[in-house]
Length: 136
Image 1 (cartoon, rainbow, N blue to C red):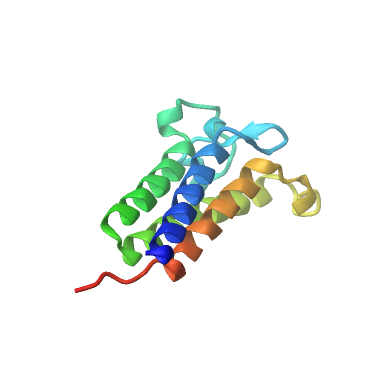
Image 2 (cartoon, rainbow, N blue to C red):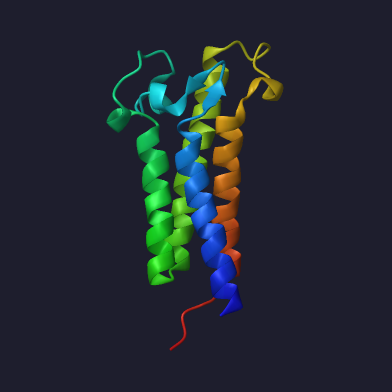
């Protein structure tokens, strides 16, 4: 019972951090809501679009899968949520590094939005280890 409570708190906190990160600046004041989701694959040069087509979407989907995983007590779904959030963060870092000269792009320039997303992903993935297996 205690493991379930701890896992639930960790999973909800991780999901909340993923969603919250979309509303915070990631690099030079630009939030994830300003980055179209398609730009994660084509480069971060597009104009800001709607929130429904922004990076908010994959982050919110990852958070939703994490909450669903808690409801059904599924380690597989929780892992999928963590991988989805991690993929979003990694793709953004790769595209940001391509758009800004690699010499000019440093980890000290990253802002709290990315760090919150990374922390949320870490919490979601740690939840997989803490989440008790389903009893039969």
